[in-house]
Length: 316
Image (tube, rainbow, N blue to C red; front, side):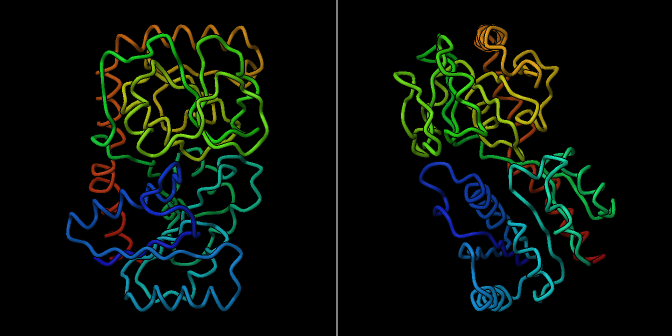
């Protein structure tokens, strides 16, 4: 099968730091090529003119793809110009998980399939008019084996919030909580003081995350947060907001949900983080196994992505 991915230009694949979309495509490419498929990745320049859009269409069409997967909603309209047997559309904007997102209808295009990162996102597409048989849920995945794992982390008394520093991730509500440290590129000026560890490289994420007890992510909106999967691959427990908990089994003892009405209650949040840290330290092997069983990208591709691709190619 020939598969082309179309995305905005951004960090290289694999990205040197975060770049969740690029990392996901890099992982998909490796697995798909390992399985014998041909893959092309085409980058769309941000704010591209009509001429540049047509150039991308020509590049993709010259590849003679069976399936084209467009990864940004502003380019969903290019689907009508693509000469392929099937088109997948995925919107990776954090806002797509919200009912108020104004662009769900961009994906309502003939002879395309919408790949949603969570069942919550799928419900929003159905409410916007998508046909149930053309809206599907496939979560993000990761190469579990790339993440170092230890059952005895160096910083057993520390939690980490690994994310871009901005208001949407809500680090400003967490600063100063005992034992909580922060890492990530700075987008908004949020003073984190001595608890800020700087921006981590991709190598640091894969090698150093396992040295913490648990991860905290209280975002106000997320599609499906890759960092939660990365943390569990390293054996970390999770403390997440409702938006950050997409696709997670919150009944598990190493995953704690902070409801929206408690997000600004610092004493409650601090207590949940401390409790989760203590519980997760005794369950690191189980946490790693949960990540591999449910979110390993090779399994997701073989059991969900490729069967859907074959169905789309056969049935349109």
